Length: 110
Length: 117
Image (cartoon, rainbow over all chains, first blue to last red):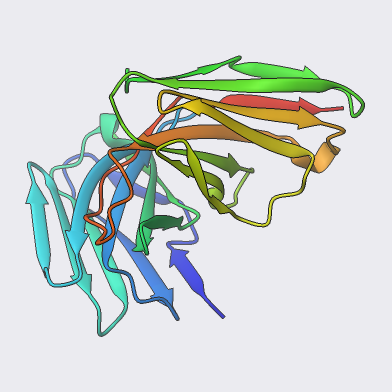
């Protein structure tokens, strides 16, 4: 069956550390993968896109990797801050549609 | 502000009521989407419209009826809902649905929190 799995548990880290979130998928062949941030009571906000022929993308303190052999994407936030606390969603791009994972809740403690 | 607005933000309705959710985008996009987000579950795609034409109905029950009168407005008409339909309903838009998907980002509204009693 087709599945998208993100870190099942909430992630708690100390301010200044690097947060690493995982997104694993099975029985999908995405053309691209996107990461979104969602704060409580609000809609998701787009962060980064990475295509199947790209290994890594960076944007300021954010880095995404995409390994189509392992069927995995990693999302890193370096020098994390309490303001980075939110739920992070990965989404696979399949024939123009997005298929979302359930999200990982990140909490950055001061 | 993402350029996508949704009204109402909160809605409580009985199972016999009829109500409508409204979405408006001010971004000049051609594709619009309805998603359902239940607690601890992934966003579920419900409907997709591209240039006002419905291109996707993800096996959604007929008690949910979408309407897209133009590329800027999207409605979700609700009738005879069930308590399990209580969720956050999110509208999103993107530039368009290209034949070769470029991975256009989607812009989401704040959602309507629906409670069915």
